[in-house]
Image 1 (cartoon, one colour):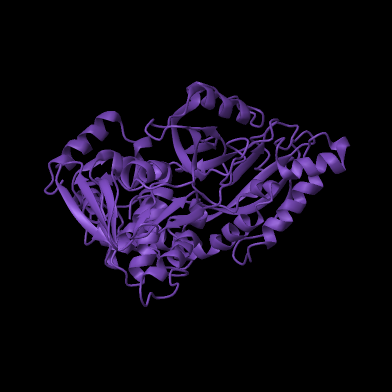
Image 2 (image 1 turned 180 degrees about the horizontal axis):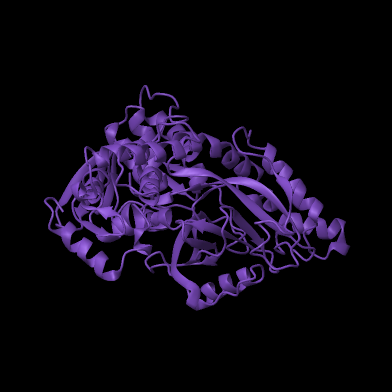
Length: 513
């Protein structure tokens, strides 16, 4: 397996759980690229209905509650407020826009309220929703949801989707895969892969020590994300007509812009949409953009133009005027979409495509596209492609099986926080909440028999302790401060540069680092 993002780790977990021998190589940290740079949502993709991607939306909607039950610590339901005004427009090249403009030319590209409500009706019913509440119409006059918004917005639709800690999702899949027998090799780069009869011979290099090793496998899985095309061309060197379209999505983070815990779904004059989401208690996350990003070797960054686009977009809705000075952090990721020839980055399909090449010997499965919400289904579909090459492969098993720390009922998070504070009185609510939201029932394993904060060793900043960092190094593959502060958590928003440097120096002195 090449690639330690959500697709690679999800497939590794599924395959190991079916009894296959699995090794996964990731050239950097787990979730170091696309899988830690999402908008952090389990969602069906409401806007994809305008592209008539009904199957994708149905699968994604069906997965939301399956995933909630498996990871109630790192994912939770969220209500989304969609303010309405009469000038909301489609993107010009969506199939829905073209049909409406033909059948009802007087709409002039606008999204009528009845059409939005119909789309939300489909959204409520396509995926077999049981836990999440249904859509409702909401007044914005004098309500908490209306307070942050400009006065011209008086009506909204409110619907359900879910939040997820994306990078933690990847790590927990990797941990569960390893617990079921998989080898997880981080910071291990695939140098080459060649067919030797019925086997692949794969050469890897430890990027820290330079040590090279040769592995053999009956099948190779290319889950390289943005590098999937590069792996095909330069590592395994096979001819493939399949292509990948790299699309950059950028986000900005500001100080908290409103007091309630709901997300906003904003529609722009250009037909695009963005979200404004409560983030890490004290912040607001705003995104995303859709820009072509041709070269995976170029680190994706939120450009000043993208930052200003998001600021101006949000300023069309919020009463509080935002500027670049309000942005405390930006991040950007590259989505490796299947190249379906779409006219724009926004229109490119978000569905996944799985292609097996068995010409010339041992097979390879190349993974194109995909989204976090459908990662488990992608893994199941990948196993359908993999199973014919192996004998006696077990059947589907991952639906409803909890990830590490997620073995408690949906809705019991506050109960867990309360009992953790009771059993460890030195924890305040913010600290206990962070631990339960990150580790679930495993928070108690981290705290052990501590009776005071001093029992947890050095505090590196905020409430990050030596004991927690040791856990992350020993159990969750963390090797650097960035791994801890920006992927295993988002404490990078709270620690100073000096504190982060101190943490990194301490981690580099630990045995096995």
